[in-house]
Image 1 (cartoon, rainbow, N blue to C red):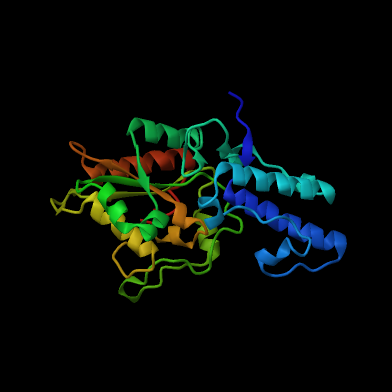
Image 2 (image 1 turned 45 degrees about the horizontal axis):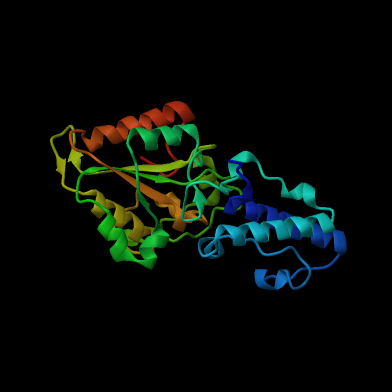
Length: 280
């Protein structure tokens, strides 16, 4: 079946929109309004379907709006600013989808291999948790294990926030300078963080933490709550952190303490650094 592009990924669409606005102002000498809702009315490019608009719009709405942007860009001779590389083409027709997003081949090969190897079948997001915490809580398991924060790769330019949504646990500021985030960012990687719940340490200490407890703590921290999950705090200075996907792997025979180290070491061997939000 032919797979037709519906629209770019939210991050790339946002970049294109900003470029079109700037080019329109330069070409026409007109200053566009500050608010997105007023830009189209003033003659600027059609509004992109991103953030909440992306979540509550179906594929046909996204396709229609993207084509409207292409028509607008063609009218002003700006089509060269609307190029979308293959890694940013996450939305297709005729494919299995979840939350409106194309799943098969959405991630890079390394991430796909992790998902297939460990059969990571489900995920939760901060957006889901804020909408229905009971539903998210019911999905998670009270077992020990590993959890991964994964999101389809997109360029970090313009996506980092000086102040994110992380909680001030014990009064500590979770935010760091944007330059620190840029340095830690891992090019072409979808896996942003790897965490563990439970397991036995080499000194004999045994953790009784569960996947449910740790993932809920992660999401609550990302929702500005003062809870103990500063590990991974870089996540929450990203514009799309509400949609980061938290997959989990229950462990039966494996020790999460050692498995987490092994997974991070494998990632570092491939990419030359640890996942973006793994700081220790």
